[in-house]
Image (cartoon, rainbow, N blue to C red; front, side, top):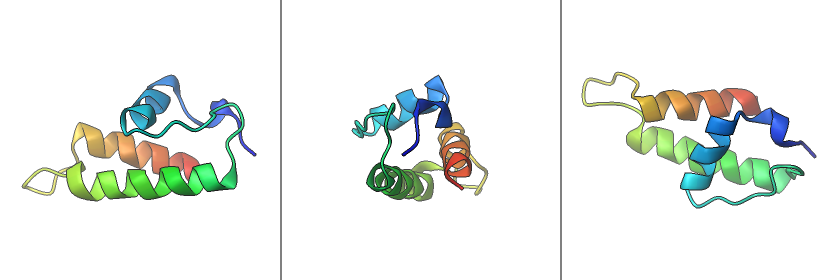
Length: 69
């Protein structure tokens, strides 16, 4: 299990904004897999502008995925 120190407060708010509500004090492996899947999908859909430059959403997604690796 992992605790809330894995993510910053800003990252936690972003994750919650995507309708994910894990217990950030006791993250399970299943929680982490779900977060990784949802964040990865969000990165693909909203993480880049039409010039393929990373957006603010993309940077947030990347920062969350970096914490999971």
